[in-house]
Figure: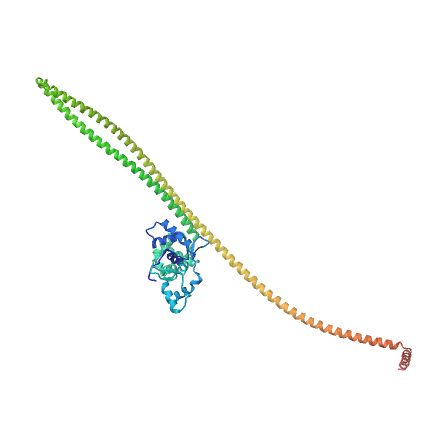
Length: 463
């Protein structure tokens, strides 16, 4: 795709397709660098959040990060298959002409459905392409690329493997990659393998946000105090300029009075020397005296104003001294706040060290549990083998017993047959016996039997 993306929705689709999941602040930073540099960052975050909520192709996972739905809508599957086959962007007008030539109207897509489908992006020339085409990895920060690589390999990667993966996306250098890995605490080394811990990242960003907010508040307070002091200093400088102007006026009036006094003294000397002309110049002297009185009154008023300005200047100097004292106090308070900030940083380092110790303990505990799991698995396999052997022995015994049972059943059936035959024979002999007994009961038969018995005994004696 040689053209650029058309809208904010398409930029968000490309970013979420490449990184799988991102938060609103991360997306806002990328959008600010990509297309909204004239807009403030909070406004960019509002626009990004509004765009994510408006389109159904974006959804939030259980961790609060936004993802892209790549299943899409069923009515756009044919257009998706066509773009996959062509591997070139295509406008809706070209699509309609192609469908008309092919006599197929099922591929005509709706622009609103394409905007809400996460598989399509619109270019600035009006054509539509696929989100998966030509991912612009060089536009993303190196930190995000490292996070993506480590997310795709939860078991961890060595620094060389990580460099090969990231360098395939964007040209970089091993020192730059190493500086990124060591800069952020959510990249954790373990035995030469680097892993990504999302929980540590959330805690790090929260602490950084609070730290920056505190610094911004302190900076605003410092700027307000500085503006207030600058205003007061400007007012005092204005008063000082007015006092200097009053001093210059007083000096001019005093110089003029000295000139008048010198002229008056010269006139008096002339009067002393020329007593004869006193009467002639009496009126002139009276006029000079009136003028001198006016000048003296004017000088007295000027002196009174000068005294007032001097008083105000002294009060201004006192106020300046008080302001300097308060400024020194504020500087001392700022120094104490900076020392407290250093203490907070040291505590943060201690907390990080404790966190690393807890991680080591957790790793050792996990290793112990894994060894126990392996031993239990071995025991389970032995027990299963013993159980299988016992089952085989029991099955052999059961087969032997079933054979014996079959033989016993066969012998029992033969015994039952022989028993039935014997019972029939006994029944026949019993009937024969009853018949013979009935025939023996006749008197003639008894007599014959007795004779036979008698003759049998007689014949048996000689022998």
